[in-house]
Length: 439
Image (cartoon, rainbow, N blue to C red; front, side, top):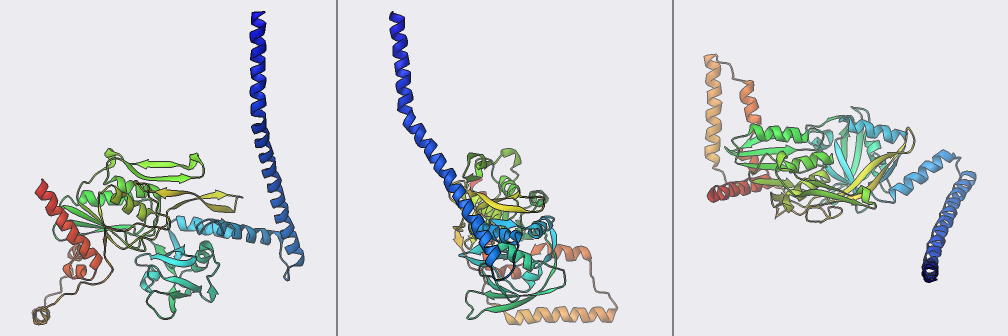
């Protein structure tokens, strides 16, 4: 009898638990049903609008055209970097990732709803034509860029090598729009090159983060055993591959978080950390940035700043800190979708905020007072020496090795023409002295 009482009590408690939980289970089921009904109603509305438009629009349009337009509109309204890629868009993206294509050599982004130049790539037609970071592209040829997606703009600007294109741009400080005529060229990017400043400073310029950056930066550092300090120039660097950005930071930081990404779902969250085995340099470091530094270059500069590993010099960066993936829809079409945002080691975001340099320096030249007579005297001596060589029948020495060595050196005159670099070099010199004093 005692066991039966306990059994009855257990059964009563179990029923009570079921009764207590029943309302919440019913509520969840009702919410799920409402969501499904709402979803079906929304899809029915979409189908109805497509059908009405196909039937009554002034021009004849196909279902396929309407669906493509609807998808483009939907994706572009999510954010500036999500997009629906038609077959031709998808092909263009594949061409771009191969690293060589016909175009202008310009990276663009959406800033405050306007198609904006992030940076012209060094040595390309856009760079030679004088386009600058921050230029707003108002028209491409005669077509307005208002309501145009980034991918549409890129598709129009890319084209056959040797063909012309006109961009109408709005530039800060200019009273009226400027028309820029550009001839498309083959875009090949030299992503890394290095030079020597003085006797003990290594200058490394990274123009974009392609798949060879970490390898080439590593080589440059190993070849410069004489260097006591390093200046990394990320100005007008529009970004590139995340793994190369992480790998570049890892060359200078031996522990801790480099960057993390957080999305809607936990599976999209990732944390990238430094490892001591990859670190090759503890030398003083200065990083140059400006409004054309975006995405991967913001990760590098921001991470080095957060780890107090480098002094940042220049101007505030662009502010592109979101993660996009390409997801195929069919064999020929895909969507480019923002799935996460980047966060720097301190937890701060890059998106729409950018990275603020430790020392703000505007671009410009260093004003110097030269002795004009001495300059003229030096020019005269050089001219007389050349004339003597002609009389004596001597050939002008055009030793290639000597020319290449000069190309690998940044002179005092070149420094004075680049105020941001000059400031960075002065800071490195101070850091070298400070490190020597500590040692």
